[in-house]
Length: 101
Image (cartoon, rainbow, N blue to C red; front, side):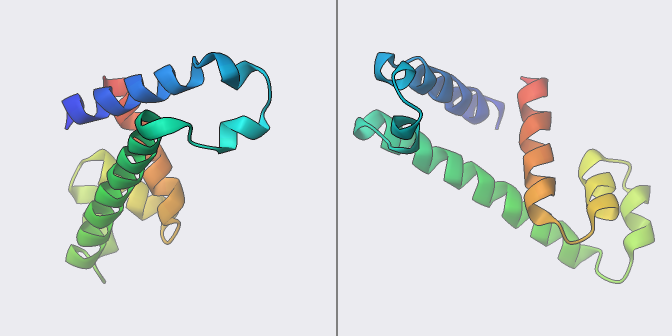
């Protein structure tokens, strides 16, 4: 997982270093070329992977939220604290992966 995440983060940094990105913010919303389309697709795949994992843990501990904290891991804490805000949980997990690499 760490190798995949490292590759995606390096690709995102390469995208932001593209010379045309400095001219206008509008172009930052468009994927230029195959490399950027692949990077965007990989980011979506990573977010979907994390979302599926969060949903699996939610189903596993449905109606047993107090047991989430007993797991003793970061994801259990996030699910317990942020309840139904999946986007925030996914963002926090991505930041956690970034800090760990």
